[in-house]
View 1 (tube, rainbow over the protein chains, first blue to last red):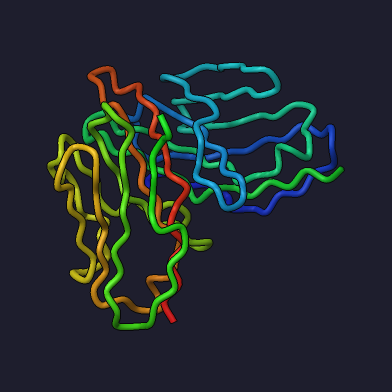
View 2 (cartoon, rainbow over the protein chains, first blue to last red; view 1 turned 90 degrees about the vertical axis):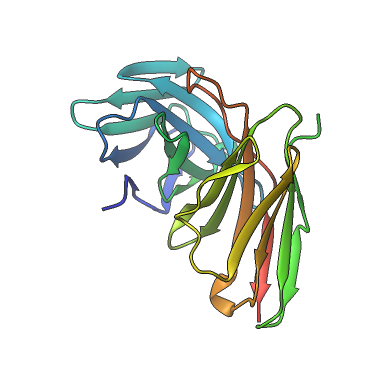
Length: 111
Length: 116
């Protein structure tokens, strides 16, 4: 079992839709959770991070962590064609300082 | 700061040849990570260094792969001999590791390697 599991998609939605991206993780000791966004032919860039359980909101983006079910989510409201990218969930193993990534979900927002 | 700089951006080589990928860290960062990205497996951690010391190389697929960090700002990933299944995009990332653990990994633009 991979430490972080993510559906690779692709996911296509119409402009304006609410997008829900999800991951599960296996190690209950993980505390730091991140979402990275990667545009085509670019490196991943940090979009949001959360510590432990709860929600964090930044504009149209909301990151959610449910530690009881080991579930990580990213919600995008009013999605735009410019949101089309691959979204990676990741966790930081604070014991080893390794960043562990899911496989990434390819999102396409259609105009 | 120009960010993490990788070279070359693209490399096409013949099977059996030696390939060297290069990475310059962001000044002041002390952790360096090499990842390989493929469609099937996503971002796979190959090896990471802290303060120039390799901490975990369990992701290095075979002895054909080696990585060095000769100084605090530079790293190389070498594949010798290269094989077609090594074709992928290779990223390095650096971070200013801190005790809080809340640090961002900054990625380079990647090297797209094609082995024919």
